[in-house]
Amino acid sequence: MTSSPNTWLRGRSDRLHVQFFRYVAVGGVAFVVDFTLLVLLTELAGVHYLLSAGLAFCAGLLVNYALSIAWVFSSRMLRDRRAEFAIFALVGIAGLGFTELILFIGTEGVGLDYRLSKLFAVGVVLMWNFGARKFLLFRERPR
Image (cartoon, rainbow, N blue to C red; front, side, top):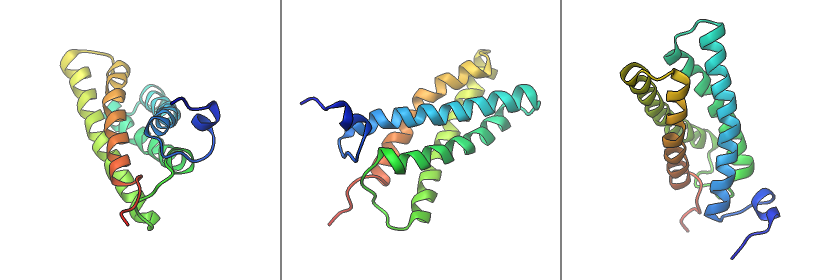
């Protein structure tokens, strides 16, 4: 069954493929914020790339959360938004751990530029974040 373009872009949807499409779009916006800050902090401010990655990640996390609850996910497991954000952030922190590990291995171990290492990390972390957040936070509440 095909979905109309409106289903992909507007309104609420519990369809997994629509949510994943939207999450990738939201992730793209958050990535632009994250990657831009990573490069600016590292290249212009002279901050070590691993510290820059953590700071840039925090900005991307806030963008991702705001857009995810506004546009991506229609169902929410928790009523308490502080608890929801805490779990959302913890999943993201685990993703940051994966990012830092991939950055370190790619840059220090393999000799890649830190920006290229970051691109490798994005795919891994995208799948982790979507899956964990969908399962833990954004599905129907049990009745």
